[in-house]
Image 1 (cartoon, rainbow, N blue to C red):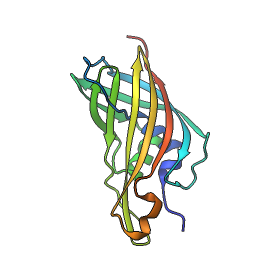
Image 2 (cartoon, rainbow, N blue to C red):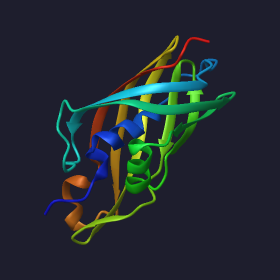
Image 3 (cartoon, helix red, strand yellow):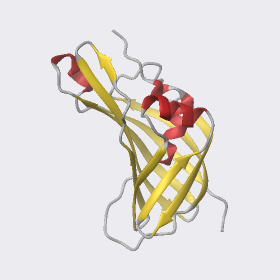
Image 4 (cartoon, one colour):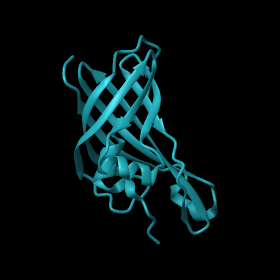
Amino acid sequence: MKRFNVLATPALVAGLAGLLVACGGDEPVDAAGTYTISLTNRENGCNNANWTVGDTASNIGVVITQNGATASADVQPGGGRLALDLALGGHVFIGKVDGNRLDLLIEGTNSFSMGTCDYTIDARIDAQLDGDVLSGDVLYQDQTDNSTDCGALTGCTSRQELLGNRPPS
């Protein structure tokens, strides 16, 4: 049985571009700004329908705001925002900036079912900022109720490469 997953569409792929993951303990860079993001589908560990490795989505607008080490990324109106709202239940990623790394997350609230398995989808990006260029990975992870029908969905991760930039300040 195929499961519904709008995350595999190029528009949703685009929307998820605002996410980021942190490490370290360094003084945070100034990541605030308006970014234009491109995404490329890579591994499909969650077997998302309509996910083709190598497919891309581009020109996704994301506005990052920052207060010290706290940041949020708001995916701007368009297909990516709509896809995020449908798949995850939101389009604003929240997290932190640690050195030049960003860790932003949307914890999915929209529920899906596959047999007796109920699950949501979280989206996270592990990215770093080098000047005005943001690069890294967007990771999609299914959060299941661990029912026997969940099978490979439990603990799975699908990945997209992220590349974005903002105008120089």
